[in-house]
Length: 90
Figure 1 (cartoon, helix red, strand yellow):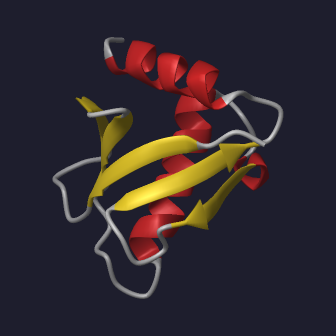
Figure 2: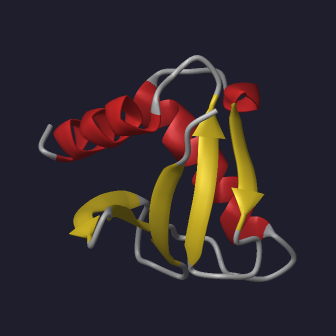
């Protein structure tokens, strides 16, 4: 399993991929960082942008941190990063 590194900004105006943050992808989510709402919104948004079912995107590190690691079943972390950064420009 390979991981996709994400840097999260909760309470944003809207969900969006905002570029790179070091070796991570910076993602803004509209949901607040309360009761796991931002994490749930993040996973759903990443699945939508990658065109995969939400159940294939799993948060496995950083539940209470802005720096998170997620895995996407059947997709390499570098491939996912490239797709997210490409989707940002569309």
